[in-house]
Image 1 (cartoon, rainbow, N blue to C red):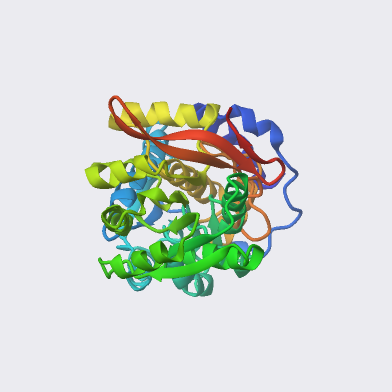
Image 2: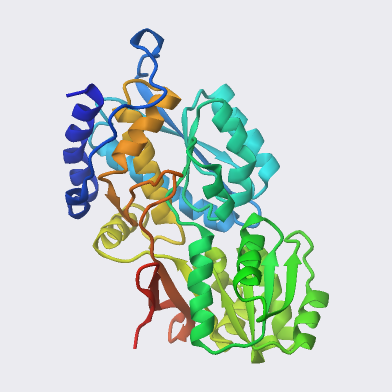
Length: 411
């Protein structure tokens, strides 16, 4: 039996203690025969005493509020390994950098992680545009990245390389949103999306599959800060529904101005980019979202393993986990396990170990087997609705969507 297989088998017991995720371990698949790009023993650098895991998230900018909370997911994974004395007796160090919701800054931060800190595996970046921006750099240098939240379909097209993600492609989420739209009987919609790979990916999907429904398409600049002209165009188009795909800070501005223009008489649907409680910190935004009974989709966060994660998050930080904190936790756990089971702290070795670890890892967000493109092989989405309660506002889960079953709304 090879050393890497022995290490992985030994770490199955560790992960059970760490996360109580035994249910998914029964779904193991046979590891591949021979790892590719395996250096000879003389070429393998020694394992360091401290294993560095890069964390590249948006801690400022349009997604800063979400990124700060996602970082807690990474910290929780580190805390759990630290409580067991590390991995294989080696301590884990998170090296955190801010991508600032900016692809150019993401590239510079990645260069610092790799060239200054010597990091070989990174959790992040957060956005699709940032991930695509750093892809060539990390591939050229054999550095593994695992994004917890970059969802654009273009990432799948990168193929078998050093780019992985724990979240599914927007090609699937757009299909979920389309089924949700069809269930409500719309005949004429407007798409209002952020002008980057994330938003345009959704717009392209709807134009491809239901071009007859798309009466108006608007791409907005998150730096502009004033969208009255665009929103007036939507109002004048006389659509049944508006599909909004964007981020938190700019989304708040869009919804406040939509309320001013009387766009609360039209249905609004959205994706996961705004499905975060920080949206409710702005009273006018929260009131608008509840008044239009905004609905949408987001990557699934339910089930036994998620509840175990949420309980540990509350114990560690005194708060419930927010959007993508669980996906960041899983990405960090996978990064630690891959780096700890690889024969050396070396990009190609970590990459091959990551593929094998994914065959049995069942995390907070479910079974994380990677397919040939570094995407999760199994994926589901929750359907949410914004509701006002006696204590405030919340995203209430009203259904689910999966490729095999389609849309299933809760009666």
